[in-house]
Image (cartoon, rainbow, N blue to C red):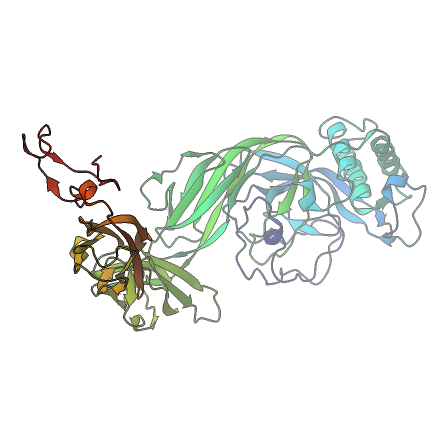
Length: 605
């Protein structure tokens, strides 16, 4: 048999591209760009089946059903009511005003089969009267929203209660009339189709079916097995780099089948899945091209029970066929539910980036980020790519390479350093040197670019300021102050001579201290003696953090008071002196001991 048409007309030409590709909610379509050619048809129209043959051969990786023939049915005469006509108001007694004559060459069952396993078959009705279809046209399962056909709840009621699910309408002379009556009733709800009053017998059957559906319908949409892979298409390099992830979602798992590809559960390609592996919803997949097969990609498949009332939508995979009528499953059956991804393979090369780190600050810099923008120079393709290359903070001196594989051949790539690693620990000596800043990618070759950064260790300084005050100022002994830094190389000891008068003494700055070092000041010898005692010491701040290019200041403030009672203070020593009293001496009962802080009254504690 040839062209199966829901209407008498034969399409003279079709538009550019298949609409199936734009509406596939379950991401199963792989419509090749440019399904733009018109379907060649003869200039005259056929009142019945088109005898010129079936649709051009073609099958997508995710095709779930293909038209293989017709079942019970026959031609019917009728009219399409105008747009304002409401099928829910009931079947009209005559032909509504302003209706358009439209005799259908075939009204009945259309047989489908699973293209992967033709033993899985089913039967459908048309729900798209004014669009044609043919033997060999490919379909994918869909939901009612995708079909965008009115009154499908009433269509579902008819399918659940009439032929071929049951023998109704029983009054029909045979299955051909029975199928034609059911199809005509479906068209009444989907396309406002009214049987010509001249065919009284079939018109009466259709009117009864419609009345029953209006009285007892609508029925709910059947649940559809869901299996989705996102994205469903990918540009992949011919050089075999891994792409992904592909997210698997749905309410059923799928069995993996690969075509010219390898599939993994990790981006590094360490865990490969072989054909026959079961993949559950929630899994992320990665894949690569391993051959020049066309089409190529991977498919997840689950053989499932497909319920009556499930719609089938043209999947866009027949060459030169832009559109085809929508179908609805007339009876429950088993078909393969398919999802996956198709690959568009492109020629590629690579770019090797060498990051050269030099200078005294090498290894102290922060993260370095290199951005590579590759612009496809071919006006017929859209393969622009953006890459981000990261070198971790603390990467040591020397050359460090990263290779970007699978870059589209012919691309012009511009290289910039968006984060130089300059931080509180280092200074960048000069702007990064990128040689060359742009490269052109050649198929199966590796372009080279070097980025050089020279770092110096960031440093700062610390200065101690000594303030001497109080009524005893100028009578104290030598004062010794110690600067202690986390980097021991910058520890210093400073001495202020005995009898230095009241005032402020700025000690020499210690420079070149690595940033983020911590330094603190402490008095090793306070200058206390028999003439003066230390009434108070204040060190502020207690420590400083070294900042790049900044001199931090620590102020040590001493206040001295005179000792008024020489007898009471003749044994007052500085806090660092070792005092030993021999048995039988001035304090004959005491042995030797280290003194602690000397209290104002001269007693040790």
